[in-house]
Length: 172
Figure (cartoon, rainbow, N blue to C red):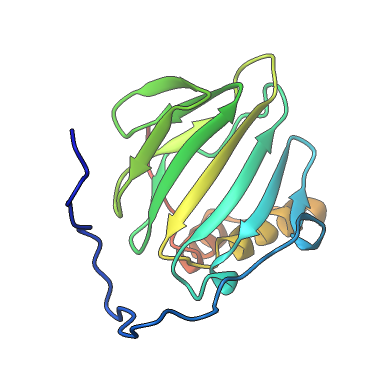
């Protein structure tokens, strides 16, 4: 396949129309990036939507051995992509579980059922990309707060928490 002379099919609602480009890059040094450290995982908010003008969100998700992960769910307003950096991550594509290893990638469009987990005896590390950049860090921080305070939520309270963060749980 040749890419010479090809045109990008990327579309945007508000394309840049200038002729000379502009200085607009956003640098985030590692020591200034927030991480949510939990007993079995660390979510590093590399580029949340607040840093990308809502274009996307990029998180690094590091999991301890046998860390588990979320149950099958979908999102209505954003896509989610997973890129495995190290270890084995079990990815659910809505139909079956796949043992994904370094270099493997899964894209899930809006409405796509998915899940991930680390069931192995070794750590695993991946990148998660949300597009557009909804404030997913708020969801993970709220889950941490529920756990840290030892709260027991009713099924209705869980449903409300999930709905506030565009998280819709399904059987899978």
